[in-house]
Length: 123
Image 1 (cartoon, rainbow, N blue to C red):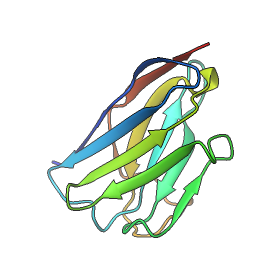
Image 2 (cartoon, one colour; image 1 turned 90 degrees about the vertical axis):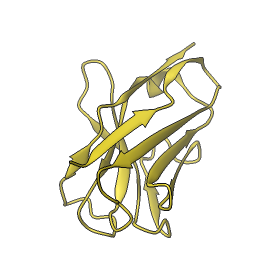
Image 3 (tube, rainbow, N blue to C red; image 1 turned 30 degrees about the horizontal axis):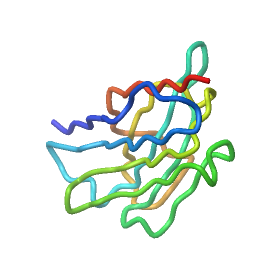
Image 4 (spheres, rainbow, N blue to C red; image 1 turned 180 degrees about the horizontal axis):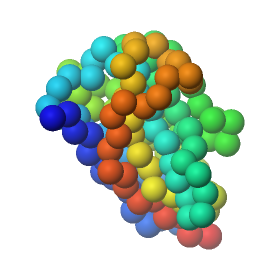
């Protein structure tokens, strides 16, 4: 019964920083590519960032490139998203997810999802 639990969201002002965490339990995700996604009000869920199994490769949506950093600690079975210079348009529910493959593959569906954590950025 694998489970992903996000935390670290909150209400902040534009320009602030937040660090999101996604802790896995029930199984290890050290052999899985993982990523962060977000869904704003009235919008579809969109890709934010991805990382391969050992953290040697990362990728970001153009809208967050240079501001967000994805990382992982496989020893603690935890995924992170450091978000800097937050903008109101970053407001969304942020979800972590895991794929079955080790490398980043945008054609593969997410196999495991967390429940999400709310991030709200005021102007």
